Length: 300
Image 1 (cartoon, rainbow, N blue to C red):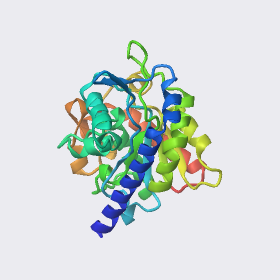
Image 2 (cartoon, one colour):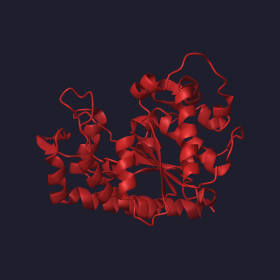
Image 3 (cartoon, rainbow, N blue to C red):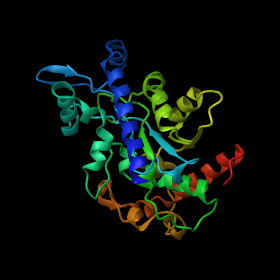
Image 4 (tube, one colour):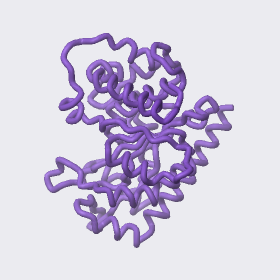
């Protein structure tokens, strides 16, 4: 059985890489992106390089039969790479000087080589927030209530990526200049292929802009259901979703396996610590997701 769904995963990775490579080799498309304000490029041997688009992280049990009917693909915004960051230069050199497979498949390659700390080079994923949100959504879809721990790792069951496959930064580097037009280009060039190959049942959309593009871009008769959550940055959480005190978070913790709760995420915290610190954000998103499902007649 494992071989069967792992073969499906490997085929999905192969097909997605082919699409991402075709888009990134298209000079017309890349010229369109390079004209947008704040686009990040780097240099390899004096040559200006725009990094290629890339494919989603895909959990090793994403295609397992028990995910059928509740497969989750999560979209955040973009990587917002620094031009001279170590990984930026590594991917650029791989793209220019080698076969480009590491650059195109950077999320899966990074995750699989990061040891105990699951880093897919997607900030709100690497901080643990996206996996936690997906775990809460999985719980709503699977059980319809709180308190029953899942023994499957949420990292194994989901797919996740950024809607924008290119990096945009202001001169100061403090924020992205990604706009709806760049998001819509990436939706057309990358996301439609991702949906066709990954066949998610639900798309977790981090932030209003991502939700807007996904909702507008889904085909009219699509059975895929987009779910909106507030973007899980500490800036957003600290401003809108922070409450004093130490509430009982056992009901949130109980929805994850011990393996996941003990995982080390970015900033050297365990996933358990992220849930306990940002409990009010997760509680509010849980209720929001449940309400969205109910409003559209989805059982919770």
